[in-house]
Length: 84
Image 1 (cartoon, rainbow, N blue to C red):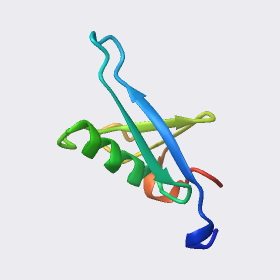
Image 2: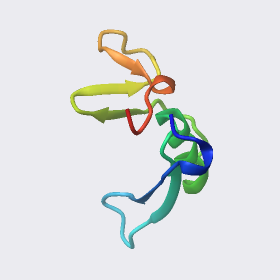
Image 3: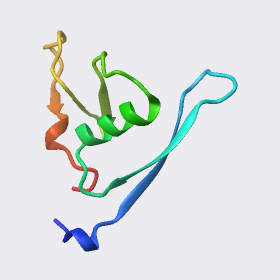
């Protein structure tokens, strides 16, 4: 993992689909942030209350928190970094 002073910052523009006028936020996260930390940042910038299950799909893998759907192979978001 990179030293703190050598870390890159990723910037995202997050736009909600099918909403007019568009609702969007621009956020920045460190390269060594986990998907759980990205989720938390999204909750904060969008003003959401973290009351729903969520998942990220990357390269055919599903990352999230295990909920009621135990049949799918869900990888813990706390274990996945942006850059691997």
